[in-house]
Length: 241
Image (cartoon, rainbow, N blue to C red):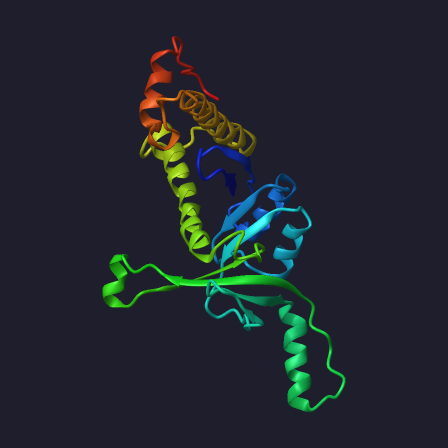
């Protein structure tokens, strides 16, 4: 599991685990790398009342996609078409529903996090011909003037930049079809971190190059930058890790 910047593709934190480790389990290892001034984008597999709350404690802002099955009632409709809702604790919410069915007078209070929900469709996507998919985002950015719904919808798709980052590391940098050479867990971790650190170094070089007034970071080629670095490395480390 990796935490990466959308614009620079720099991987700033990595969590590793056993083959059976789930994404949410690995994600909790990255919580201490979150903080004020950051906006974290994440896919719909991560949203939960507990994990959302743990992220809020770090001070980070969130913009995550949610499944259509998640219950997010409309509490207040906002001018840009988004609305305020509550992300509730599902265990307590289910208990309250059971109480309602049984006619209990004193219902339990359902704790929750106030969130803003943005729903939209991508009309120029090829899937529109067979029925446009509705995206639903949940965010801590509650003010539509500060973060308009259209801007959040456009921004969320930058989340896929991390897939391009993984491709740079696994295919462009390591080489297509090449597996890790190490045969023991400690050496596998060493080799993985070597790949990530090398990628970070190349990306940092690209950021420095982009500070040139005539250069734009997103138009710089990672593979060309990697080839440039390799041409300046005089001694290849052709030994076992």
